[in-house]
Length: 399
Ligand code: HEM
Image (cartoon, rainbow, N blue to C red):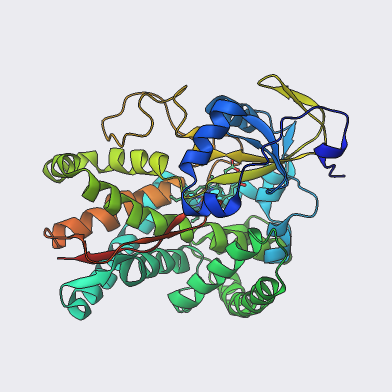
């Protein structure tokens, strides 16, 4: 059962001032205020208790027995039409995660996927250059097709048009964020589920005859029933597309804003991994993850009742001065511990190695190698969207 803390006798701090529209415009000033004034607080607008510090989010991640992923009435389950592993706790979660890991561990990335990621980046870069006439929108002309084609390959659906998969992903993500319960968004989810299921009919039949190293094939071989394979593939489509897409534009935007660091990485390509790690901290594409408490718990001086929906704001934790020195500076030589952009507990991102390789070590470095004159088009401003999932919707560039 989910309770609304405002109606309990427990005295939770409330952040009435927090405005989702303002978060979508620029969330970082609000995150700063949350960390300073109310690091654990009920937000009437978001309808969750929000945790905004590094310490608080890390505690939640390390205690899945209290901060459960099995959430009542969640939008993600409705958006994709079933309960994937991200909405389960161990041991059920671990059983489904194991075959997913087999497809995405670093050795598989090296041996199976690196070559594909390179071919895909090259294909869309050449297309952007030949059709661009010295100018393009880096989001729609490069980031979207590269991220989508990589994912088509990883889920074993090379027959699908990458832009269809990108649309399914966007619709599932819109459903996951559909806290205002808009019917048009549920209709979009329904249409995308049907299209995705039709493509899966064909894919699953083929993979049963001819297994391959794709995620879908590994899930089928893992002995999961077909419905559950479908749920987990739809989760991967929704979670494995937007974030790599956003990381392409985030990295370019950040490097263009820090010319000295850009010169440094162009002179020392071994620094690309650090650029990726710092960029994913600085602009974390998944701003917030959701949990539900299983019992009362005290965190940073606040008692959260059991049964409460929680928003752990990873994007805020990653700007916490209690963890990172000068957290609002982009610094590729930053010392110190890991950040929370991929989570840190049992649900830590399964696609972390794939994303680092595909984007941080292949797609963005190739862009700068082939287009040394690439820069932001100062005449046309970039646009941003979202806060739960945040990234650029357009990044005009010239070369
Ligand atoms: C920069 C890119 C990415 C970022 C920032 C990111 C971030 C995250 C985060 C924050 C979580 C939730 C962790 C938690 O709840 O503790 C997650 C889970 C997940 N991600 Fe990613 N992700 C990225 C790319 C990918 C890719 C490319 C794939 C697949 C190919 C993927 C597949 C998944 C899956 C399957 C889960 C669920 C894991 C579980 O519940 O055990 N992600 N990701």
